[in-house]
Image (cartoon, rainbow, N blue to C red; front, side, top):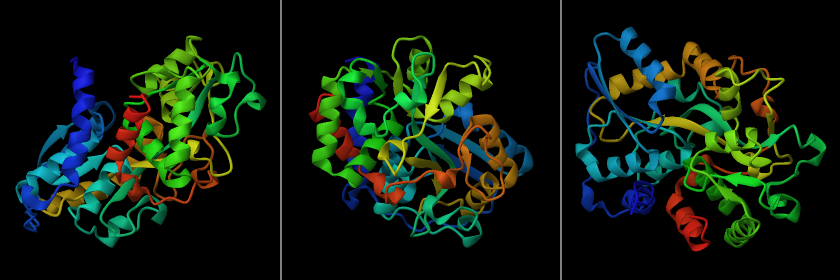
Length: 347
């Protein structure tokens, strides 16, 4: 079995571990710590958040910071398995689903209102035990050389039409895609989601490993459209592929609350068993401070979640994107989504 197949095989087991019975050890409540050490479990890639963590270190020279990078779902499962002995001071997740899984297992502690109140209620836990740090939107990237905006589908469900046969790309193993499918299961039901997956597969939808590869396949004329996160196109422009006017891949936002334009968040939570609460809260406050929110807007192309921070001007305001009625914490059932993807032959 190759490394990719091994990872896909193990991931459902990791998700199962989050919801397993309490035999793995219960959190003992931990302590606040003295702020002199912090262990970050980061589901966000070092490429995107490493500079922020280095800035935090410089601003807090008395705090020793260690970072463990990995897949968000697998890190959440690790925190569950470690129980009261987890060294994790804070969990920095790529998406809300992994945070929701820990919330469901009652393994996150309530955050102070000074942290929670920095972010609108739609982008934090209703229970107060995790908070979003930046927003990302699922979109349809499209080739503007061959498609006019008027030709684009109004709904993600329209991509099953013969018009799009063999011309669509998706990344079934990607966490963001799986969170989107989880949202579809919640908002549209299991039967409709299964039918969509089967019809997309039958329509020759092409699978890729990552969002960025889908973007590049559109730019190369390999496919016409692809399901990705919005910031990958901004990333290509920032890295000098072309300016915003001449880069051929453009963003299409589905309308009327279509689940194809799901707003998800990267976010953080403090494990109930954390022995480093003081430093963890300092890091959470740091990420939600204005300079770091501006970093997300300017350097990673994500939506800042704190009021008053300017977003990328090429993007529609986050408040203008109508959403299905979902609590982001409910995106926790990634195991069920992976089972459905395997059942339909998508994975």
